[in-house]
Length: 102
Image (cartoon, rainbow, N blue to C red; front, top):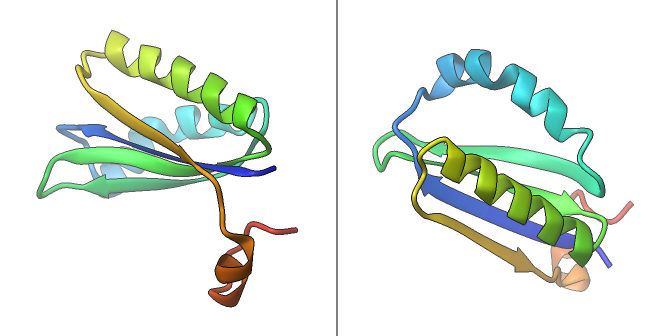
């Protein structure tokens, strides 16, 4: 069963186009993570937050990615990473055109 992972953390930037340029290689590498279907990158420059919303094939893949990603961020000096794995309500999400049930 597919799982949604939401991650956010304090992030001082860069944001916008500068972030896209700086993190392109990382974004490409995320495509190779086991079980990862897609990621939406999130940023809030006013509140100094970074993160993402991910769709994974299953719970185990989402958990493994969250563990690896949390360790990577902590190695970069991020003290607190909030990650939550969610079940998806398919009937309601389908009504709202969610691109997750192919």
